[in-house]
Length: 490
Image (cartoon, rainbow, N blue to C red; front, side, top):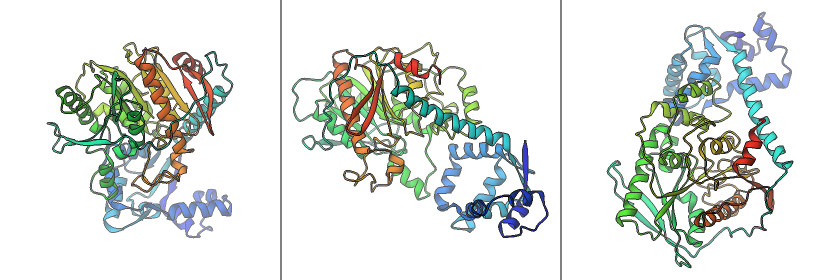
């Protein structure tokens, strides 16, 4: 079912021409005063505030893909490809500092737009379904009959540990023009030699400084840590996007990130990076976590393109990470053999549920420790962390840490955040985005990651348990059996 809207009549009505005798005016006049004022405000609110940044987003793969999908739901009389909207918006950005929805509609060369009501209803239902799944997951966890042994009271690490310092290394690599900047955290004291060292990778637009809190905690507990900045997809790339100099980076940067991992491992092997431990644990946040998983050598199946087509038809709004996942279809990734001395993968807010189906036969026998939050709308925990565990892991040591109220950005520590929820750097994260008690979440993450690493050294698993509490935080440690029960009826 499609609903035609005359652009001229819509603009006339919003300007007060209620008496106009048309089907559109009749429908719009049924709106109450508040609804009408809300629609007028929506149409007159700037659609684009920063034209330089908007240009770069629209020119990116993700921006183009979203525009294409919106074009399937809002059709033009003469052009349903999205190109006319794109061209019109580009021209307006050349003329104006701010562009409103009114400006865009007024400048289109077509006389009417057609709203695909069935399509919008389907998108709304997908949103509703995702929210219902998240709520059901929490309710199921509350009522879950836990069969595991109760865990001991947790003494969470303090927020700031100041004893350990890092060395900044500039590593020249053949695949990049600029060197890699690495923080090498070697423990200042070693009660015993650890078997593993940690390679920590930020997510898209992330910065190594965002994870000093975690590297410091790990090093203080005896683990050597290397934290890497990935040029082209770090905070400088995000700043270049905001200033309109570069397009929004996407999955096209994954091959270079994989090459970064290889270069760091070779530098460790050759002695350029001085670390006492032999085996590596790959750890990352968001895209950093996905890169770690890809580095293990796990392969895609031949149904990836069809799965992604179905996902993109739903506008990808209930799981924003699906855009990055499905962009991989257009990227050439060389076949990898994996990493010989890889001990485990730790992924904070990881994703990849569309890349690997739950019945994947070629699972990786590498322990996974995946962390997520119930407030994560970028990589929803039930489809991403839980789904990813079922798809990939065959190790009995694998676990998922699920923190209630934590978001996709909870692990990111930004400048000025120590004593308040809002930070001062480019991310400028506030509690509405970063979620509940970010510093408490970070402290809990540090403790549980260290707990996982301690058990890994002894080839033992963390006890699974639901409905754990620490202070005001509620969280759950889930093994494969519990996850299968939770997702069975979702």
